Structures are given as structure tokens and as C-alpha cells.
Length: 413
Ligand SMILES: CC1=C(CCC(=O)O)c2cc3nc(cc4[nH]c(cc5[nH]c(cc1n2)c(C)c5CCC(=O)O)c(CCC(=O)O)c4C)C(CCC(=O)O)=C3C
Ligand SMILES: [Fe+2]
Image (cartoon, rainbow, N blue to C red; front, side, top):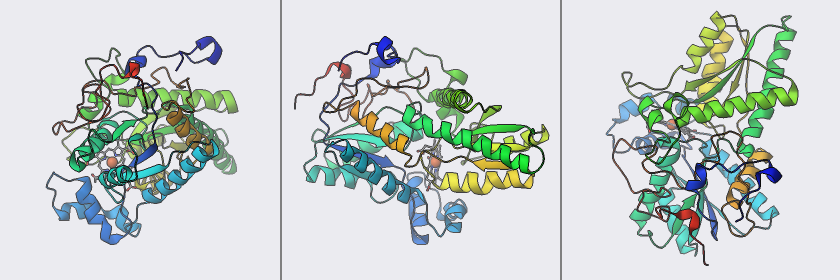
């Protein structure tokens, strides 16, 4: 791996995140790790028991949060989305002549991560590179996946036998950002056309970047570490990453299509006890406020999500678009990256930047925050429920990421 010449590539190496790099290795398979979801009415309660495991939540309470799954035949779209993503990744790897299979494992539903790791080991794999379906930094989207692997390695007795590392959080990788640029430009044009058809072509349009709300305590811990010298916007890497990505999307939309609109970051899918503070404003409250302030059109960009899973098709397409309709607002929801060519290509680029063969030396990042760390800084995205075995952190004791100087390790095989 040779250091980049920023003059030549136009992309400067971030001196901060350089510290959390891991040298390229000879990985022999990709692990696509995701949340998992139910695939029929009988799966719904067992799935929700998995999601809330260890918290002793009674089934009656779980039934209350199951309505969106129930209304959709007990089926979450997430598994099918992941089957399609897995197939698209395999096709792109094959197209580039890279002989790595893509193995798939979930946190909360079949195929479960520990079984996938055991199958991988039994099939002869020894070094896996994990790609998750979460782009940002916070407990749920980064550390919890690192724990899923740490616990699975411990549980299966494979720690020390099977190496699992993960690609960096990719919120600002061009492959993740560019489908949103395309979608946001098309979304603004669509809402403008709806308003023109209604005889109000110049009515105000507002872009809402939507992401999953999380408890403010988790938001504040996201990316925070004694080893992290940066102060993040609003004190949270989770919020800062979304703001930076949203800023870049709007800049590129204007540059490439001449379209512009005021925008804000809003939150959705809040759960948990009402007295526990979560990130706000909720998207539905924001839509009502914007309507009161005179907005006539809303473009909803699901910036926090990789695919059209339940939080997107229910909380945005059913609830938020209904809020818009009730207020008489023109509205549209922009696509998620899904299996967009540029997204799939970008994920394969992220795999290549970590592998010896087909190595890509430059690490593009569309915002000044990145490229994010390959190996998380000590303590970041803390788990307030109690520490668990965790991979891919400078302070962890499982897997290989705990090497304090991973970027000078050489893969010898
Ligand atoms: C940041 C974040 C993402 C985005 C990053 C990423 O994409 O990973 C995300 C994605 C998802 N969240 C999902 C589903 C659920 N999340 C829950 C609960 C929670 N999520 C949280 C955070 C996040 N969640 C948090 C802080 C909780 C409460 C505490 C807890 O329980 O840990 C619950 C419990 C029931 C409830 O409280 O509503 C469910 C069922 C699904 C599957 C959807 C499908 O089936 O299609 C997906 C992709
Ligand atoms: Fe969630």
C-alpha cells in the first residue's frame, strides 16, 4: 500500500483516521452482516424476542410493536433486500475476477451470524471481511455488529481460528452518497412537477434527510474516545456524519442539476420508554411544522438506510407520506441505495481497499469527516448495558483488531 499523492488523486488522506487503519490482508470471504427480519406471521414474535433479548420484555408488549410487520403479512422486506445485495456483490466480485464468496449472517434472524461463522470455518475459510448494512457510527450500527462477531467467535470456540475484520463505516463513501444525490435531484424535480401540475410551480419545497432516532446517550457516545481528537457537530459523530453527508448531497445536487431547496435532518422510528430522551425532531412533527411555515412540497431522503426495509416502507412510505397527504403537501420518498450499481461497486471498492490482491490504495471520502476508521477507537459507541467481546476495536480482546498498531501489520499468507 503506497501513500496517496493528494495532488494526483484529488483526495487527501485524513491524518486523523490514518491512525485507525488496518493493513491489507488476504481475506478469503466477505461476510455480509445485517439485522434480519421475520418472513411470516409465525416469525414475528420470535424475531422481536431476539431483538429485545436479555431485557425481559413480555410477549404482549412485543405484540404492540409488531403492527407494521403484522400488516405486511408478518414479512419484513429486509431479508429479500439482502439476498439481492448478496447476489449483486457476488456478481461484481466475479466481474472483477475476485474469487471471494459472500457469506450472509444476521443479528436477529436466520441465517444467524454464529452459524454462518461455523459454516465458513467448516468450509475452510480463515479470514473474513465483514460488510454490514449500516453506514454510520453508533452503538446499533457499528459496535453492536462488532459485538455480534465477538460473541459468535466466543460462543463457537472459533476465536483464534477465524479472523473477522470489518470495512470502515461508509456513510461518506461515494458509492453510498451518489445514489442519494441522483435520488434527491430526481425527488426535487418530481415534487416541483407535482406542484407545477397543481398550478403552483414556485411553491416552497423542503428536503428532509431521515434517519433512525437513537437515545441521546447513544448519540453522544457515538465515535467518542480518549483517542479521538475531534469535536463533532452537536457533540455526536452519528449526528455529524449525517449532517456532513446531507450537506454534500445538497451541494452535488445543485452542482449537477441546478436544483436546490432548504433541508434539515430529522429522525424516525423512535421506540423505548417516553421519559428516555431520543434524537429529535420526529419526521412527522417536522412535516407539520414545515407545513405551518408555508412549505408545499416535501422530499424525503432516507439518508440513514441502506435498503427498503420495514423502517422505510412503513415509517416513511406509510406514515410520513400519509402525514404529507393529510396536510395536502406534494411529496415523494427517494430510493435507498439498495442494489444501485454505484452502491454495489462502492462496497466492492471498500472490500478491495482492505485486500492484498486487487488493492485500491485510495480511500475516497465525500465529507471532511472520513475516511472513517477500519479499527474503532477505544470505547467508542459504548454499550451502556455492559461490555461484550468485540472485534475490530483498538481496545478489544477478541479477533485481530485489538492489535494497537494494526496499520503496520503485514499479512504473510
Ligand atoms: C440506528 C438504528 C438503525 C439504522 C442502522 C441499521 O440499519 O442497522 C436501525 C435499523 C433497524 N431496526 C430494525 C428493527 C428494530 N429496531 C428496534 C429497536 C431499536 N433500533 C435502534 C436503532 C437502529 N435500528 C434502537 C436504538 C432501538 C431500541 C433499542 C433496541 O432495541 O436495540 C426494534 C425493537 C422494537 C421496537 O422498539 O420498535 C426493531 C424490531 C430493523 C429491521 C427492519 C425490518 O425488519 O425490515 C432495522 C434495519
Ligand atoms: Fe432499529
